[in-house]
Length: 436
Image (cartoon, rainbow, N blue to C red; front, side):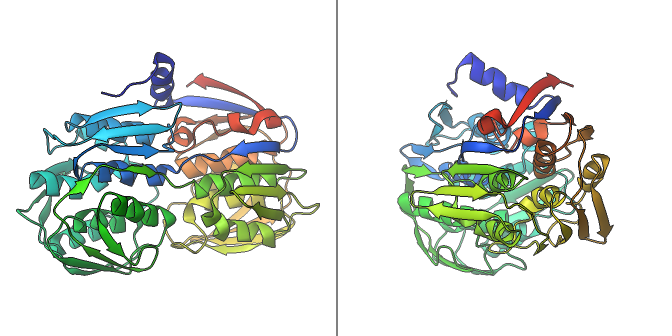
């Protein structure tokens, strides 16, 4: 079972309820903050734990966010034993005995990461039946590469009504070329290939740091993987994996978000536990005139320039500028001098948050998938709506530099990916949270 205090359980439950956060700036962000583990690293590691039939998988630096908690509930429903100590950011999973191949439909509909359970269930049970996954609505987010890759490895996979179903007696290693370097698709096929018969090669693989963390964790469990961190990953399948102690990646998205907060006029932050892999986003901040210094041990010092400059960015797969940081950069660009131009190439509905920034007084023009921000603007606090995790986090960033309080409706979206985001900023703002 999942062990946690009643206060922790209440906080996690509260995160899923409609919430409004009031942000009242108290001056530029200053002081120290601590970056936590990445949600997008924790989710595939939880899925990987289902491949282990010997021993316990102990995952460290797990962020206590709703998406993680939901996936743990799903895993528990499949028959795995789960123990979570949120104060220590540690989760232990014993999946030696699974009793179901059908994850809870309602819970699956709330978190897209549940999609990565397909490969482990196929290997452990020989079949699966899973609802279409949920998550943020960002436009087209197909999972065709997941299904195509599993079929290449010998599985029968099909869609029926609102369900995805699969069956296979045994997966067989194969040569797989992804049409595009999909993050979760690459992780899905890695999870499938580590226990398939023979050699698998995944070409045009995603190079995100969370993919490399999954690979290194699987190696600690006994897997044989070469090409970690590259676009071509070679995996020699093995019969069994063993329990191991693994650690989530430091959140590069949190690192970039806090660095951008430190770039607001007058800002100065020291960021502990910063992810070096946030460099594609940090590069844009340097172009905007910010002083950034990465010290040994993962400490990043950020100082805002006297005059924040414009920049240009195009989103793309790692190591290009991350689409998840795009809403944050647009918010920061409202305070920059000149015309910042950002082109979104990953998700066709990633610019929905621009309407909310305009409500605060931002001057942003949208041309197809390109946003042109003219600044600086004196944003004013008002009522806005967070429609997804990153768009909501961008609104929080904008609110930190705005005049007057900002009420962010749908703040539960932000909590799905960022635990205690503002609390860790200390005295930079006054906040109040209410149920909507």
